[in-house]
Image 1 (tube, rainbow, N blue to C red):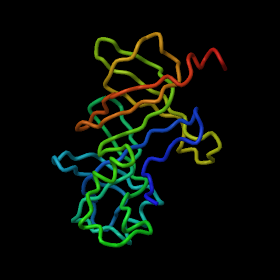
Image 2: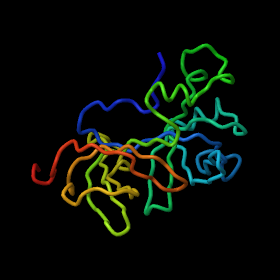
Image 3: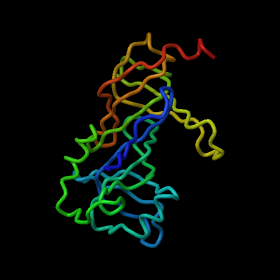
Image 4: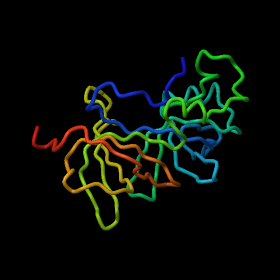
Length: 199
């Protein structure tokens, strides 16, 4: 069974921001693997933090000279400064129960089978701001409410794209593509209109 790096949502109003990027991870300091840069195949460097659960994988399984598919959480302050948090590594062969030789594998074809592609992000949350002049939107994401980890508090993502002002405060599900350090809207679906009226 091929494990989907970006699983289907567990409920319609699940909020999240998660994506997949192919690249090499370079730590800032060679003996501290939790901070560094992901360098994609076009040479774009993106500031990156490795979260705890991915850190042990990194230490045990990852050759820093090689490119991998990284499962990441995006953060940004504007459309030009993307920051990533690595949540996991997608290698169906090394890390799942698959025949072993991953060197001959066409990963992008495997992703296509899952209706995904490199640099795809799924962003689900409340549309809180629309800048029609700059063609930017802001989505507020509240991760799982039952999380005891206070680091998981609400955050906002700035995305290049256009949505109608009428959709403000609606819960939307966005398909996003990363271009350099920007997140760009590909398509959207309105899950629920005007959340604030319902609260």
